Length: 384
Ligand SMILES: [Zn+2]
Image (cartoon, rainbow, N blue to C red; front, side, top):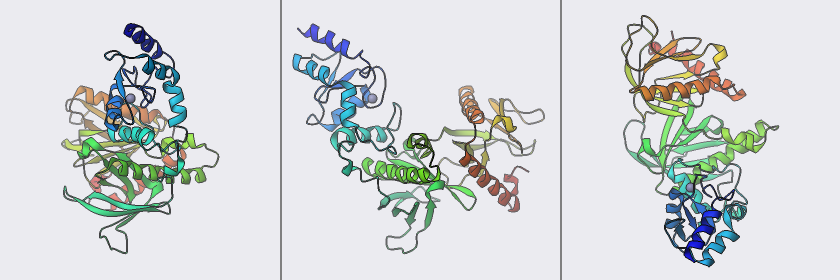
């Protein structure tokens, strides 16, 4: 009897729709929720278990015994029809996680689907609004301390206030210039969020978190929702699906590299590099408020290239590589050969990608920054 049921389960998981995890798409699923009727990967099954058995009852496909009734439930529902029910009204701005995404995103997606059932009842999607006010813990600019700060999302801007009853905001960030990136490992905060925006010709990073994962995803989704509305007005011929990839971008890659200065005699200095879309930024430390420099990455046909090694005459170091832009060649070195390969591959992918209209804005902003850097006493930072 049990053997027959194990075979039935093994056959069911092969069906299209069931062959990948219902929540993150990971293959192959090794678990199932037999009251909801979905096949799950090990990671998502663990989140289901945390919902409690009143919401989701989890079983291993191979290690547990299945009775007739449970198998029938899996036969009757399955991933495709569960998706029709639990994901019927997922707003376009909502980021659906993939395997390997930050766990706060995965946990909140699973809770939103089954516990709060936000995608069955649109009235529960309170992040799809044009106004949001609340407090977040914000890291101080020059010390590793977090303070509670009031944030307001309204009129296509994000504002934050340095005092609870302050009348004027400390900063007003235009949402069209803001990128938001979940950054749990770098910040050592499960619900950590890095906000990057243009401020006086330079990128500015601020770091926030909230105790509650639900709240941080609420802010993340609300920012995406407003940005999507704005983009749909700015690019009326594009569909929501086409615009969604530009709402927020995860950093392509970040980490320590060493970099020489503009002169051949300059020594290598350790810098924290972030590749954010077409912008390569370097900082003194991973949690800095401002980068020391920013390099716009154009298309390879416009004299941008990257290769292993340092140019002749330049100090060479292990695992070095050179990035050439129309203005200058930047020489860097990675801590390992694998790291160098990852950076070269990531930058190459950007150089091969065709520019979008908004990329030119980013280029203008960075070159404006260069001009002001050239005029300041930090002129050595610029490409001259
Ligand atoms: Zn999964």
